[in-house]
Length: 572
Ligand code: FES
Image (cartoon, rainbow, N blue to C red; front, side, top):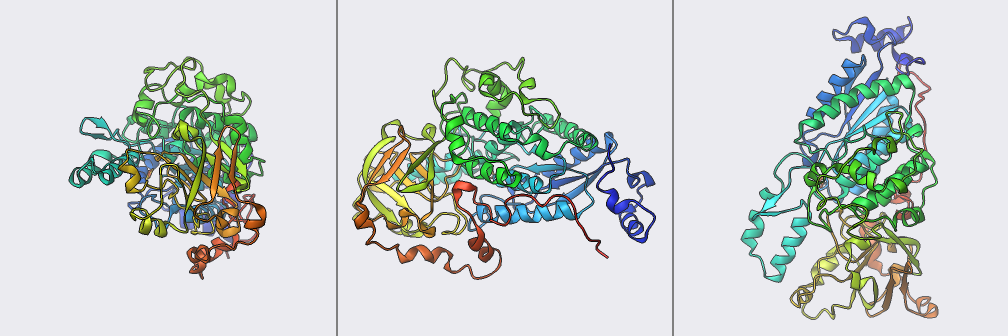
């Protein structure tokens, strides 16, 4: 083992070493500081205001036990937490802030290795972005999904159930009282959302990237096997430091390939795109929007989970979990990238049976032949947009319709149920001003609820287009992440009511069918600057001045890349 990074603080006979040891001693024997025991920080996103991560203190205690068993020193490091459902205006506005704060604390402290505890949507990507920019050894423990929601004898997916039942209320087929009574049936335990939403997708991403102990992702938060995995991960973190295996040794272009395959085969959230691009940017890996389409588009969907399917994460775990899914698509994986254990991911795919073929379908009987995310380009999205065909309606994947434009989500809510809104089932609903800069923060609002008069016709899906994101628990024929966004001068800002729009998923195109000379005469709606005009100070100001487009991960321009682990100056 080479000299531990923490010896830069604790080593030596000088006054500085004395100070660092003295304040940290608190009963610790000398071997806590003598360079034989790696200092492992447990970066913990537990918070009572991040309900999906409330239980991570228990996970942290188990990790700490494992660290001690392997001869390391485990250190609690509470970091910025983001609760998806509570944080306003959108947790995505704060992802980069959380990552920046975490990065600086990882670098500023005497840490040799990291165990990253996340769960709710933005927490794992923020932790990985931060750890990637520092570059010391790191491993993830995903906090795991909650128990299956059950309402009136049916599985009720967290998030997905809200969208479905609220639409039923609007359509008049479910009473408001029954709707309100369902919340406790949906969220029954600790853990993150039970569907294949963003949190589940981020856990799968972390494992497929090689950043977890293989077999850990998707372990339910209530399951004793999560504690076991946490103890083993604590031991592994000490080993990682002793081996000198860093995050850059594990996360490579090839491991992104495997993560894209894993997310497509499991029907993962579209939010994976923006987070993976941001993580890659921190590592200097040339991952592009096109890679998602090229690698993932033809991957079969093998997991029958809500929002596009029937079951929930607990069912997936019991059916064999991620490793059973990956075993089915082993030939599509790159065999070379290693995991945190030092062994390739594909080494863990032998003897991984499927225990329930309704939940995980065999490769020969996929739920959908080609399930990945499709990247669309055209004059309406010259830098790209995405759509998830697996969550869309097949009959709408080739569509021409007239635009109905909303300049903000507030504008949408004010007018959507206006009886005079000239909307038909063939209309294309446009929501703009919801990109990273425009909102600001790129909220999950793109899966617009359908107008009441359309719902009453029995229609449950329409083409929708936005520069915003969609919740991973949502579904529908929704074109997302349109770049450049309207507020940054994208053509989306020039669309007018009645314009014809052509969506052609098979040909990867999205077109505003208006002559160029007519577009040249148009100016963007003044309402598009309203969203970010009030961002005059603090993080929001910094964010709108530096945020990049969704097509490259919506990171801040000055956070892309790495600063490394070195700190040149002493504190005193
Ligand atoms: Fe936290 Fe869904 S709200 S994971």
